Image (cartoon, rainbow, N blue to C red):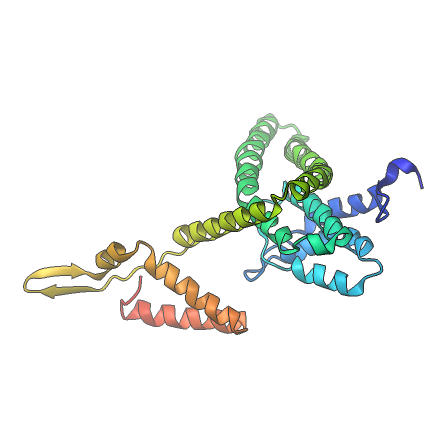
Length: 278
């Protein structure tokens, strides 16, 4: 095997393995679900490297696969960058398990989801797609048959480059970054901060994505009391937060997601009919 094809001598990870991860990253949304979102696709994408890192450690491989089934969701184009970092962190954990906290792997993934999704959405959906469509439409308007190919090229070339080089940059810089963090003793602090960022991201999603209000009104001595106004005075978005915590409680109790979804639909329907919740 050519020396230039070897990426990690210690674990025998090669460029061929990275190519597999690159192509597999296009399946990230193939198994998207509302329980773990892109986690299965992420696991499938980095499996070639995980298989080599834990070649002689079946239990370690099992733990790694379970670890990467935690919720993951972000814009697909920059996702290989996170995959590269995850691979580097798995190598670090395998190399020095006593001094490396494996929970930091998911903490780092969680902390990168929001910022990279913002960048990815802005450039790939807000810039490249619009630009490619505009140029493609101009060719189509003049009756040029290459119009759809122009659109596909202008949109996909930046995406392909971002995926491939993002994977490599994440891996190589991830290794260097982890080494420096480990030596300086800042890994625990970084993990803690990453957890805070993850909690903030979840809180923002609850506040912006869950529209749950109480339209009940009462008239006392000629004064109309809107219940939602008093709830907002106690804590804005209290009802969405309460609903989320209740769902989380049942998930912790291992209640099936399908049962929870059916219960939410039934409760939502009943509360909607009687005007309890809006």
